[in-house]
Image (cartoon, rainbow, N blue to C red; front, top):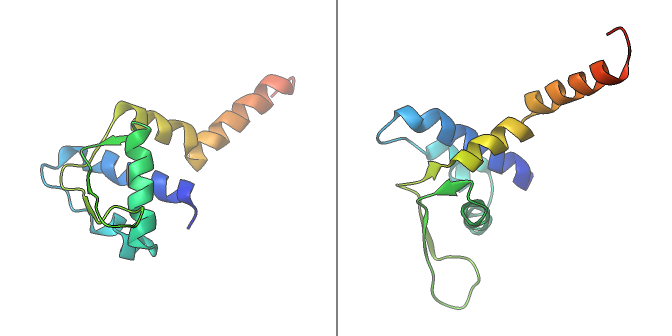
Length: 108
């Protein structure tokens, strides 16, 4: 699965979980996404650094570059994350393309 697809999947799950006080994240864990825990941690760290999510805690130590542990109990989507979904999902791209076609082809 491409990094972009994982980002969208995580953000969509977080957006859907806004009404839940204790959301279940089993479907966005590394094993469910079929990726390594290191890659999962890197992606979540990138997302938090880009302000798409907040509330993820990383425990570091040792010699590797990946966090030793990633704590997602308080993970939440941010407004920038909501905007990312709106601009980068397949549906959003189709709507944007349709608008472009309508603007460039007279009579549509």
